[in-house]
Image (cartoon, rainbow, N blue to C red; front, side, top):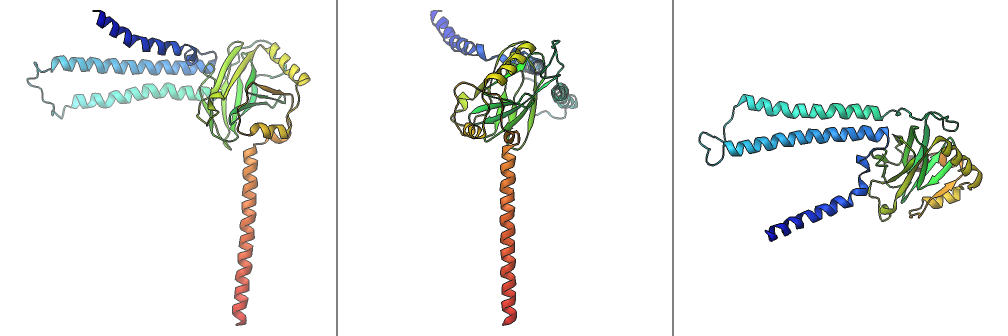
Length: 316
């Protein structure tokens, strides 16, 4: 009995440690905003459907073992075919399961593509009905730009609680994934392909975010915090930044874009107009322009050579 008990504890101990380690990583199952709540309901519905399927399969499995076991195998033909009732059942059941999963998923996608309903009732003097923030991922840091307030932050972002926030996502170099588990699901950041994500916090708090896509040696440090504040506190933060923080220069911005890990956070009261443009697109346009110019020069040189050859042939 003692040996059995020790084996039982040996099996349970790793499971207990695993569950204990997941204690601080279950934000997905503790939604703190309407977007995360919609996705949480979809996760729960999917788990219910999978549990039903698993239960039915186990029941059928046990029934078949008992009913057609070795002792009761008379009259059982494993090669039996042509049972139309069974064929209809195992054709319709997967279709029904797919429909039951597909309809809520499509509905949720359409809902999340639009702004959630604001829950705040305080006056919104700075940000209006919603707030727009441009997000740029770079190796290995996050840039947050407030077009309406002309503020730039690095590795943290401040939002008003109860207000829908539209994050316009972009990557400077490597493709990445923007993720705030407590507020919503992941969304990609890519160069020259703008993406967007609506998020909203129910109440003030600190919501950790991070990169959800491996992007090299600094990936583990590519984290940020979403600080949700009341409307009054958000307005005070904006005023404090404009009054006390330095402006971001183009030289400083180019240095920050280089692959490196930034320990801590940075705040700037303004930024150059040049970085409002998609730098990758500008670079691409410049490269395309240079390539087209080179091709034109090559074509013109080829044309000149062909003309000279033709003239030389005529003279002969």
